Structure formats: structure tokens, C-alpha cells
Image (tube, rainbow, N blue to C red; front, side):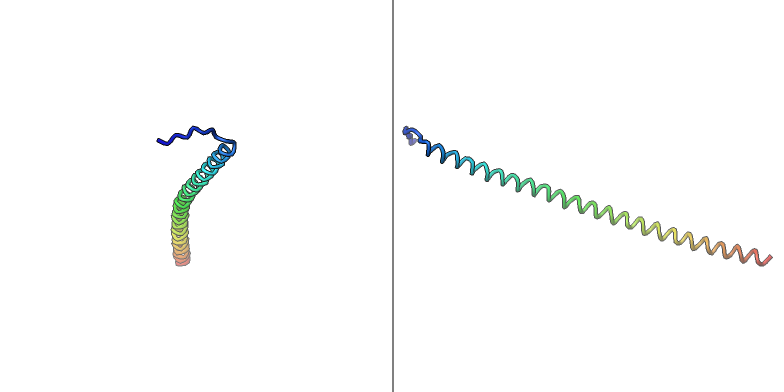
Length: 89
């Protein structure tokens, strides 16, 4: 084991503090990147779910519109038949 018993100078301490700050800054940036990636993944997943919900809702709206249109057509047909029966009397 290499032992160095020479006292640390202010320059040595300043250099060690600077290295520690750089190390902490680097780790902080890495953590920020990982957090942002996690949020991006969640956001992409949520967007896919919302698009599916929008598509499902749109399909329900279209289906309802078509069914109401068919009911209106049948009601109009019924009215015409009723009018035709009344005019025969």
C-alpha cells in the first residue's frame, strides 16, 4: 500500500473539491437525462392511450350518427305510409 504522509496543500484541496464538483455535476446531468427519458416514455404511452380513446369515441359518434340517420329514414318512411293510408280512406 502506497502511503503518502505529506500534508495536503490548499491547491490540493481546491483540486479535490473541483473534481468532486465535476463528478457531482456529471451525475446530476445523468440523473436529469434518465428522468427526462422516463417522462418521455410515459408521455408516449399516454399519447397512444389517448389516441385510442379518441378513435373509440369517434367510432361511437359515427355509429350513433348512422343509427340516428337510419331511425330518421324509417320514421320518414312510416310517415309517408301513414299519409298514404289516410289518403286512401
